[in-house]
Image (cartoon, rainbow, N blue to C red):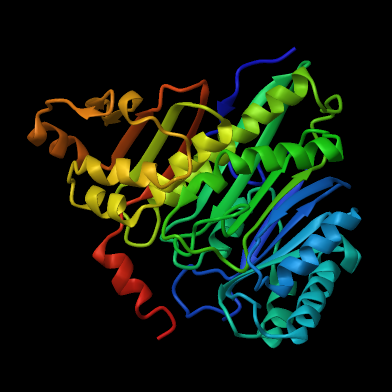
Length: 404
């Protein structure tokens, strides 16, 4: 039925069949060589689209319009801008979002209702409609335009983040590709900042939505950079059936698709953590032996979100007391004399008590670019993993002058 899931070298959102993309610089962001700030994505054929969105009460008008149109169905195109969030600007923001999709629809040869919008940037500023009206028609679409789209959605990111994975299904090669942006204001309750995924699989719409939610819950929703959520968080998954494969739904084919989507989303999640504002280290927290999946998720995300854990990692300080303190306030069921803790695979706590370890050796291990904590609760079978980054002086400096 199927083959092994593999990563596609140089893969991006337009690696799946039937998707084209492009981008341009319109002047929304401060000029720099090779900077882009408006992008388009198009499925050449009708497709199913699934989405998950921010739970922030100050939801961007762009998110509201996107959510409405995905729910209505018949979406084939995306327009996305960076530099302005289109949040907290009143009813005018919704009208600007509608007009932007209308301009994009004309450029894509679609009806306005077939286009969704994503925006990201500074809150409280209206979209520069004159720049958008002039810039969108200048965008050229191509099958290798995914990288330009990935660059166009960047704000404080230092580099684009892209992925593609592939697998065989009944003799047909299926591909899932994606892009993501985000470096700060990341502690998502649905996704993280802007993430767009595409697949040439034919997927039943209800299953597509379920698969995306499951993938996000185990990846992007398990990421924390700074504890702040955005007004614009959006994840979309387009599926156009370009691979001419059998329809994917619950069952063996669905399990394989879910695994591939999970791998793509985890890869993008780790890329976000690596490129977070001021970050120099990726943190991975794995919890096993929890009573329930909910407990495992709570424990892992609480530890990776702890500012004290993040600063300890920044200083390569094996201060394991910060880890267990965060674990203890997570809300997960914990029995002290059953807990074991490992730092980069070195056991420093067992049965709830410290064990002798070579401190200088652990400090050296924590000095690398990746630091892992494995916590065994020894109460059940549930497990979860969360990702984050160290908290540095550069993060504070950068965000002290974000709009100035």
